[in-house]
Image: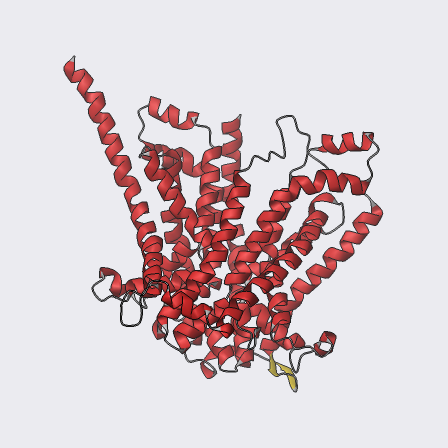
Length: 565
């Protein structure tokens, strides 16, 4: 009898130990790839160049400089303006996609995703060809220069539009038709229904979209670097302090200032997400858009105009990359794709980008999905799982420039065992996974929480190990989400700039960084060619990925149908 009592305790202890050992690698990765670099950044901001602790002296010196302080004000104002314009356009576009019967909705939705395939440098280059000193449409600006606030806002609106649209489309897709029927019964007109039902129901989505775009714009480096002119901004000031002046302490201070608004927007978004806001109840009736010729026509014209503007950016870059000498010789050819003439590492940088994207997709998925599974389904202590989840959300509030600079300080000490990673492709992969960790982590957790707990209970009743249940049941059921995670990581790594701009060496330069280098050297046409090569690679990868995984998705859907039944 005592032996029978001892065995369950021993088995329970073994399971707890195994759970702890299983979740430890995820914790170590997040500590090494996120927490320690950010701690190194904070430490650098509190020390002078000689390494002496000076507290907030560096911050006071920075804020005492009016020209440097102007960078903070400019960043805040341009981010607010860009976010307001983007969210307004995205809301109307999403409304047309979800609440009208206009033709071509699927095509408009596809076009709206095109900016996801491009690095943020691409809109800046295209805007120069459109509105620059020799631009096709420079007269449209009425004598104003595209270099500066106008160009930054236009470029950021293009780059952030699909992110806002995804949030608002999801918000507008959730609606209870019974509320609108009751409003009609009470003789409420279209505008009254919009003001009292639609807007309140999508308010959290509007706020989330606004803070997301604000955070993206204030931390973006690509658009202002290409078309910002001489306008001081926080994101470009970091680059100038670190690369141009080798002033790492001031660069750390600017990085912390850049972190504050991003952290604030993150906290606002988390607070909104924590508030109960059930759009659909158990007895809700899905809202089906009614046909209204006037409304459908108006939104068709609006969406066509926005889609045309979105298409204009990559089409302009493509044309610029093919003409011999803009605007004097418009003969078409592939001269500018001979990158060795403009940048000796051009094609090698492109190859490095493809390798980075592939390794990030593979390794990132292998790290993030098991980590999310251990947080949701694991048996480790709740405090540890909650701590890992909090660390996994940290990249949402950390700009890429800040994280990359943190890596510079963290690896600078030759005594650090990880110092050998400096300048390697492995370091770029680790940094990119850490930078984009949060979105795949949240996607995986959402999918895992949707699974019926009875699946795990059945496995335990049959004395099947959790690893077997994960491999044979959980993974097949969540396979579409896993594939989307890998696709997201591939495209993000392919177009990344800010997180890796401080970390590469000549042998590990990337395509997006080659665009930056060629643009700095005045080789705008080759820069446009490399940007379009990144764009085309992302498009081909996305289409190929969808075709290659279609069969797996269909089999998973059939399995889910049988399971639900």
